Image (tube, rainbow, N blue to C red):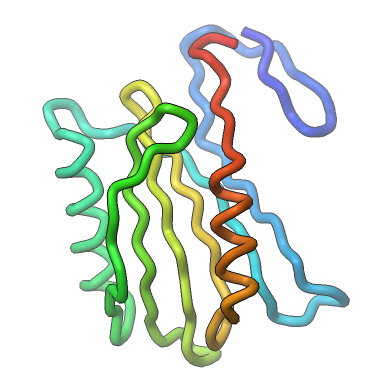
Length: 142
């Protein structure tokens, strides 16, 4: 299977799976700022997509200080079921504001996490929604 990277491609055995993490940042000169992290995860056998999302939220509540959910909604991204939540918690460096979008892709979850130290402005939130809404998943095996 040819695996595509931004920089090119690599020939991998067919049974390998992508567990990469992509971190994209809008900050300049290493300053803290808005970032978007993309992770991939297998949904455990026998678990529904909603059960997976609920389990991930339970883990976040247990491990992140003062974790609160401000909003949670079901959305569709490019014809794929997704759940989006807006949350806040306190990191070592201070308050964090996140928009986490979990997308069902086959039997895997693609998780897009927009993070901002402090609070996202209305303009930043709108741009995060635009970026996430632009997601176009490749067909399986492509």
